[in-house]
Every structure is written in C-alpha cells, then in structure tokens.
Figure 1 (cartoon, one colour):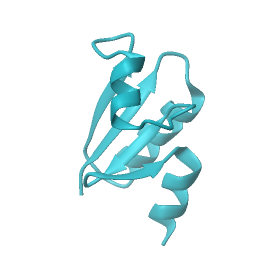
Figure 2: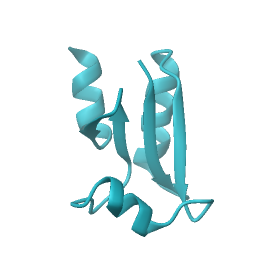
Figure 3: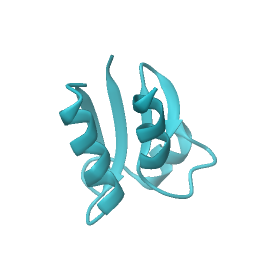
Figure 4: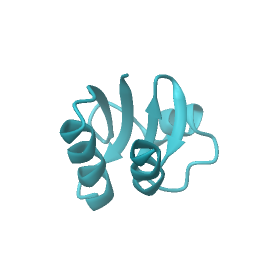
Length: 74
C-alpha cells in the first residue's frame, strides 16, 4: 500500500494523517501546497477539494484524516 497526501503548512489534520500513516507503516508521498505544489494542482487531482489533507491510497481517493482513520480501522 502506498499513499499520497496533499497537505499544507500549519495543518493539524495533515500532521495527524502523516503520523497515522507512519504508525501503520504505510509509505507516503507528501504533496505540500506552497512547497513545490499549487492549489490548482490539488484541484486538478481532486476537483471538489475544499480542505486538506486530501489522501489517496493506492491511487484511490480516501478523503481527509477522518476518512483515512475509518478506512485503516477496518
């Protein structure tokens, strides 16, 4: 399993999502808005995104931190 997490600076839910992925041993690529990535690129990947993080597991959009937590609890 591999994850992609769209995040931004000073985002508590982004930090919690990265910590959860690390704890579960799931490698992730972080795409941080303002650090090499733009909001427009996020909206290309997730057209309805209103918040970050936006998390993909194996290419499938999971959603934010709450959805990630639910998915990994199954």
